[in-house]
Length: 151
Image (cartoon, rainbow, N blue to C red):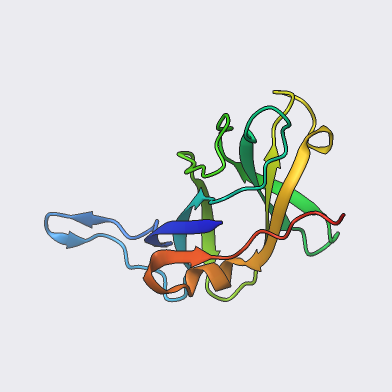
């Protein structure tokens, strides 16, 4: 799957107010700089999981909760019917903090029952990575093969 991203730097200067005559308040001396990142997912040559048609893929994004070790869903795309090469329209927005590490897991499934539980769908594949690896990608694109389910 291929991830493309858009970045928008956002500095936490909420107390820094300007007027036509200049600054009214000074920016904080110490602030946390973040970049808002919007990830867009595109996959190619997805495995066919349906017998009579192509897969109906949907991608999910999870983040590992460092305290519990559990994966928490933080975003998802729309489902695209009968398409082994989906280019999902829905993006997932994340805040990237330069000094923190965020473990991510992308899961692509074949939707057989709309509105059903994820566990009841067919797994196409997963990718484990960090947000820092995606941010470091050259040309704002990061490509990694999906790891198919065992068996």
